Length: 222
Image 1 (cartoon, rainbow, N blue to C red):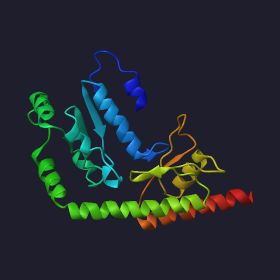
Image 2 (cartoon, rainbow, N blue to C red):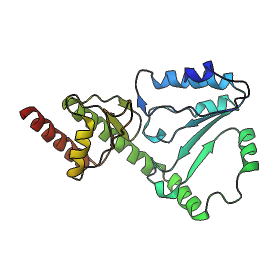
Image 3 (cartoon, one colour):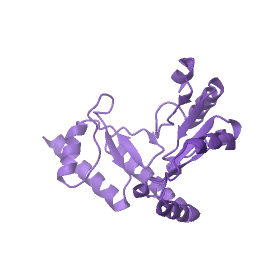
Image 4 (cartoon, rainbow, N blue to C red):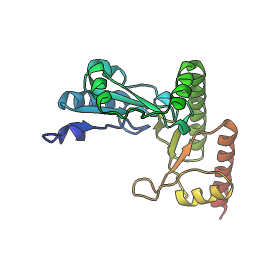
């Protein structure tokens, strides 16, 4: 985020910093400190995307109380498993929200989505239990991938980004797809040597690991 507040331009009034769900060199605390500097440097709005916060170890929510120009966005698509609702919400100080209410559509969210979303948010115990299960499964999956030789950075989301050591990512992607195991492959610089693997059930994760191990054994025997 440092590159943003070093290159601020006169008249710039809207910046969306993304607190990466794949953590590489910086800790989350350092990233939050960057947002603090950014919020202090601009007179406009700083919007923080926390779509994956339910699977993370920290949040930027305290910054909302500290800064009038900070808004945190969240969604029910990830932690609540309600992507079909297309429902999310923003958290900010009253003065900022008042300005947004002046320009929003009168019926920007339908009543059914609001009712279902409210019901889901009232059951925090169930949501938290599901999120904790994803975190535990993520730890187990990362450990198994490491044992197979993959490089896997720390993740704060419901997926991991895995780099194979000896085989091409695109080969593994195609081979897994032939077995009915779907992971994501991005043919673009910086990502074309990696697989994006969503955290599934324990059974799904185990099937993935067994398939990768089999592909690795076949590769070594050729």
